[in-house]
Length: 456
Ligand SMILES: [Zn+2]
Image: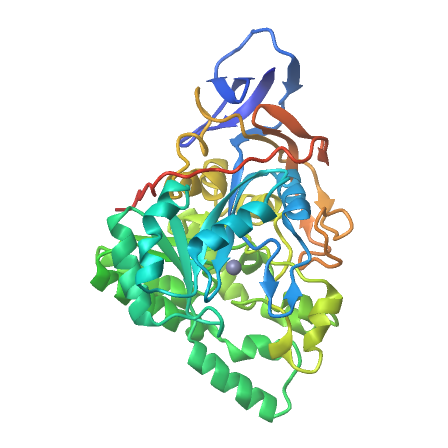
């Protein structure tokens, strides 16, 4: 099978160039120049930008949170992902207490069967002890080279000392650990205080975890990584205060990777006052315009490394568990389909970044850090034929009913997007044509190499 894309703007790592691209089997055979080779399928790319397939570094499909399970499993979640231009998701397999990492790996591998885009796993660990540490080589062998720890959530929380040890241990293997940075004790105290005062609606979710609660966590992570002499990766950075602390850590020579999410670029705290405010209950919470602008500017300067969605969807019925107590609302929102169109509309059209930076933020840097480069994340001969043809002039309104998410709400409901992924090629096969999914279930497991620590 050969697919030829003609007359497109090809987005390379450092430039955009008009030209053609040819795939054969599961690989790109030529990217750039004028190609007049026979092909089974010829796609007119004029007016469109061709990117390496987008990589979503942060999803939670089929995740049990207490007694409820996310609305999206891998089947619906990866359909939504690929229609939005994402050809690989990195989901968080979760090692619950009492479980081994291998147990979690097998459990998630099973969940992900039948996915419509490629998938890999970060391993979220709830314990750090000799038994878990002994499993690290096995994880690497299985292609899991990134991990995660939480400073919050009673079932997952680890201590700062464990974070320090994990950074130190994993750095030796060129693996990395991402940290959910917030101050759990202060959040708990504020939740008690708000509830005692009868302040139980969704807006108080944000009040319970203000900017400095994140900044405190980012600060503790930076210091732990500084002493451990290893890399620090902040997942879902949402505040200008947290950004400032990460910036200072870089100034003192630290290797820092920053992820942010679309919700922190376009949604804001005042939305908790809407009638369906519960759909915005996620952690970190929505912030202010000032935070949005700081993050967008940091995308422009290259300080933010990549954008993941933190897709973690719940129906309004599930969300209603918190109608009399915001702290009982399951945390998270649906967004895996909408990442590229939002980043394009808000950051590119908004003048904060160019198309090259969009490619870096949505694909290249994630491929590099997470051990997939140059198989993925770049348009060049020999790389995987995972490709997005993005139409920059396709105005449309985001609506939960046109999303493929198995979720009856969207935090981006009504958002006016300026462009969209038009066609998507996965493994050398056209799986999305003119915005419609035409081939499902084609995703494969991505066995990842050790991390490409490009800021080392
Ligand atoms: Zn998350």
